[in-house]
Image: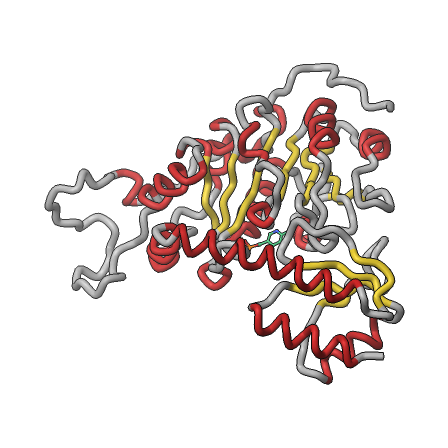
Length: 354
Ligand SMILES: *Cc1c(COP(=O)(O)O)cnc(C)c1O
């Protein structure tokens, strides 16, 4: 395999856009005076002083929430950045490291569509290196696609829409030969048996991990995503993030949810066992041609005719995702795992289809 080692040591500052390196970050009132908890009269941020529970700006560094996440994940706060969904975190990575009309990223279709959308939005080249037919990385082609302007490589693991995890040995090799940042999107990690790459942060200065409260944590409505990386990477992102990017309601709701850790774990366990139930039921359907292994809360299924089966399901009140137009996913339907009774109803509906 022609995936030779890096020729020079990793140097983060070399990756940072020049304007970002030079800029003076916005300094908010809440940055300049950090409350020590004692009674003070706050006349520094032009807020309305009459208390209604939300009249004050949120904590720009989300200290309480971060300390709770740090405890749960076993990662020090200085290696965590929070954003308005992981979509904002991904956008910040583009804005910090990719020079418009010059730099490039690599994405690995079939995968999450947002990486490509953000590349277009930021006027950053997107080199697509398709997965192998078994949904693993084509490391040789990735290595060939890398050039001096390639700043980021996006790996989604478990991958959306295919459901599989990317083999750890492949990601290790990628981290070894690529001198930019390897961004591993772990939106579905809690449904997986694989260990999170957050455990390897100390080993790899070019490793960035994103996670979200939108899937396993059941909080898609509050918009909260996290980024775990070296202190150096997080410092760069902190310089450019909007000061109050995570609002107060979101911070409070996320805290409440984390304080119900057992509920989160029970829901994850239930969804995993429901995934098994659905898979078993689908295996005997005549129009199902192939089912792919899933480490996520959805299953990708290859059917005889995706458009037809999509319509039939819709007529019975089920909305699934037709992924047929994605590379390697022809006639692929993606089913999100619902509640046990929703899944039972889905199975009944599927069995009626001839
Ligand atoms: C759903 C999903 C996300 C979540 O994005 P948020 O902005 O945090 O809601 C991120 N990555 C992938 C691959 C997803 O499927």
